Structures are given as structure tokens and as C-alpha cells.
Length: 294
Image 1 (spheres, helix red, strand yellow):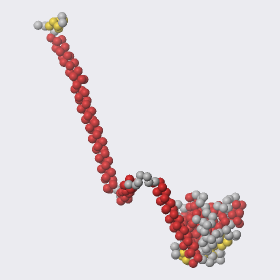
Image 2: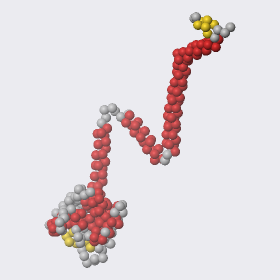
Image 3: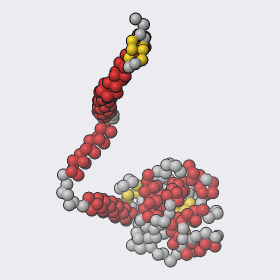
Image 4: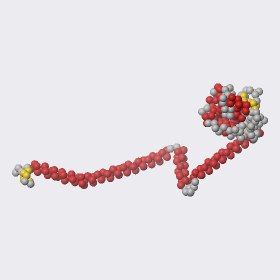
């Protein structure tokens, strides 16, 4: 038999076989689309989610372990810093909710400033006493109490910039013998010129500001260490602490140790008087003294 009649159409066995195969393929395709593929996709999607969650969990654990390892292996300083932060969190967490933190910070700052001011006043009072008795116990030096006396409440120069202060202190360091008392005397002589009508008028006449100590230093022919550039050796952190302290007292606290406007090196024995042995000799007393509390 070579053919079969299907719906009035004679088909050979090969066509029938192909038709059956196509029908089976269609059914399988339909099943894949409607059932098997969605199920497989759902399983795959769920698997991806689980993998992502697992990956995230592993990342968190890794970060945590790294953090623990870092804290364990880091220096004592960093461990202490971390522990202090934790303690601070605990303290802040236990503070009353209505507590004004800003007020507490301000109060603490004011208390610190008060303590610093009291400490400075104590230092100045001890300095005044030291110059009265002729011995500075802070620096373990004898001072010439007959010619040098501490005065307070003099002109201050807060407007000077950090660079100008460094310049001033570097010049003083180059001119004095590096001791606190000689630095105080050297710095005092510079600013005394600002109080002197004679000296300030002269600097004004040179086209500068006679009330500014920086202009007195930079006026031609006045300070040899400025003219030669020797003061530069003390810039960039090379100013002794005692010199810095003395310059701050003179410029920002209005302290002076005498009323002389000029000085010469220790080699000029016949010029003026020295505040300490081995220091500069000071002379040229300011006219119409404006100092307070001598």
C-alpha cells in the first residue's frame, strides 16, 4: 500500500510520519512554554537570589572579619581611639534627652579659657616678682632689677599675621642670646619704639607706619640681622621656645621688661645696661613714658 486517504487527500506514509512528528513537536513546545520553562525559570531565579544573598552575607562577614583583624593588628593608638569613640557613644546615649550639648561644649571651652588665663596671670605675677627681687626662678637667671622692671597693660598687636609674628620672633632670636629674659628685653625695645614719639615720627617720615613694630624692623639701617638676612636662619620652626614665649608676652599680652628703645651687642660694654649676663646692652630710654604699673 502506497498511500492513505485522509480527509479526501491521499497521503503517502512519509508525509504522515512528518505530520505526526510536527504535531508532537508542537505539543512539546506548548508544554515547554506553558509549564516547564516557567518552572525552570522560577527555579533559576530563586537560585540567583539565593546566590546573591549568600554573596552579600559573605561580603558582610568578610568586611566584619577584616574590621576585627584591623582592630586586632592595628597600633595601640588606633585601638584606643576606637575604644574612646565607643565610650563616647555610650556616654551620649545615656545623657538626658533635654540636655543641651552645645551649652556643655561652650561651658567646657570657657572653663578651659579661664584656666589658661589664670595660669597666664600667675606666670606674669611671678615674672613681676622675679624682676623685683632680681632672680627669675622660671629660667634660673639673675636679672638686673635696678634697670629692668616688668610693666603690664601696654600696647598689644593682635592684628599681626602668623607670618609677621614668625618674622618678628626670628629677628628677636637672631638679636638676643636665646634666653627668655634677653628675648623679652630685645622684643620690648622694638615695641618701645612704637610708643616713642621720636622714633615713631621718624619711621613715619621714612614712608612707613611708626606704630607697627614690623615697619621699625624693616626700616633701613636699624636692625643688622634683618639687613644681613641672618634672621632667616630662625624661620621654619627654628625659633627657641623661650624666644617665642617672650615675643607672645610682648606682642599679645602687653608685657615689657624696660623702657629702652635701643640696644647693642654684649661686646659694647660702655653702652647701656644688660638685663642678664651675656645678653644685649640696652639704652635710649623712651621719652614721655606711657607705661603702666611699673
